[in-house]
Length: 309
Image (cartoon, rainbow, N blue to C red):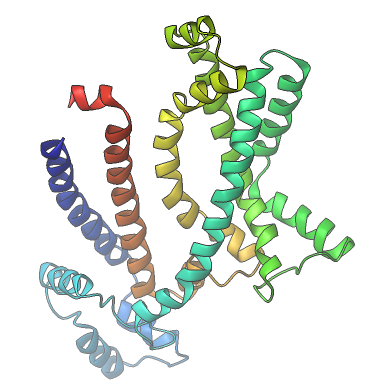
């Protein structure tokens, strides 16, 4: 167990360096001169002297490898550079925006867990019934609708027509409800399908047969079936956490939610390269770390995986 965890942790290190290299390369592949862009975004007409001075300020006169090593060293110290537009440290910009995205992702995750477990267990218990078919049809149809369209419909009905929620921003605690529901639609169907199918497969396992022979209550049998059906869902859930945070871009822009996704879109429109680089790096590292944590948790929960390792 300890050797497996150590190997996985060691394997993560080159992946993180690879992500950082890709984040740096992708920005530097642009044909535009970052020094000229840094001047133009501040409404300054660039001259040769000003562009040259800005290139020296940004360290662009150095070789590609030297610039990458310097940038990576600064990132390891928590310094992602300075925004071209606001002239504020990128780390401060992300720190201000990240709590809003984290709160949105947390509420969305609670909605996903509640409805996925409730609908998945209900469909598995009443397999093949009209309840099963109706619930699956509703969930799967809703997941096929684009999130931006769902967000607009929810905004139109609950905010404009009924006036229950705000249309944008985070003025009140209730402002998070509509964007969280919009973000959850694309994930619920996945977990409903996983939980339902795994529970149906486990119904025919020997441990369920022995539980019925022992005369256990149906609620107890359902609880044991669900417990042994969550392995795949836990693995998928671990990868959904960074997807929730990285996937808030569209929803945050629809509802004017001041999170990291909206910050990234604004940076793209303004060609604010330091923020874009930091966003790519942080999201990539988050996916790698969450994948590592899921593997470790899965091994702890499943003795079969420990035996294989």
